Amino acid sequence: MRAKFHHGDLRNALIQSGLQILAQESIQGLSLRKVAKSAGVSEAAPYRHFKDKEALLAAIAEQGFIRLSERLETAEEQFSDQAAKLFYLSCRTYIDFALENPHSMRMMFRFRSSEGLSDYPDLQDAADESFSYLIDMVEYCQQEGLARSGHPLPLALAAWSTIHGLSMLLIEGCISPDVFHENSQESMIRATLDTILAGWQHRPLIPNA
Image 1 (cartoon, helix red, strand yellow):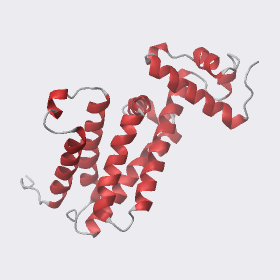
Image 2: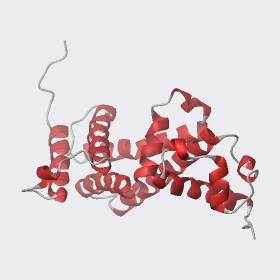
Image 3: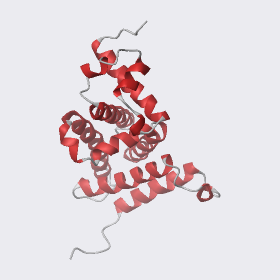
Image 4: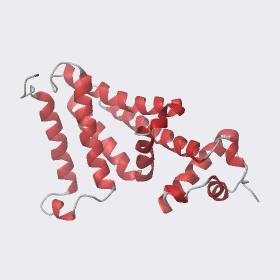
């Protein structure tokens, strides 16, 4: 018997089925037909929510950003009065999310760099919401003297570039085990975060041209 879903449940079930297929196959191996079969619904059912495969992938990306924002919000609420702890927990939350959800992470930033992002305004909003938590965190660190004053965007971009780059290197297995021979992955991550915070506290060494 085919599974029965409420309206919202079907959409979420299709997204989860899509993620499961992505975990086993490449994007090229994903299709709405396979997703329907995995979810236990008719081949026509996915078209109630997604006009094509690309729309399903965009929904997977959007859900990833929403879940990341939820975790960043929890960090913000937990340490809303402790700037240093908020900084470390927010950065670790981002890295841990990537390590726990590599397929979501790849899909999120596949669209983030896509020229067609404007075709999915909900995805754009979800992505912007995630970044807003980094801006909030920088501003709070500035207020508490942990980061230099000025516009928070350059500092947020510096942190994002570093923690995102490290996250992607880790989930893609690009860092040789030899790198962690004398230092654990945990200690290396902590050292990286220490470096970001130290950079936030220093004035630019090279004056503007």
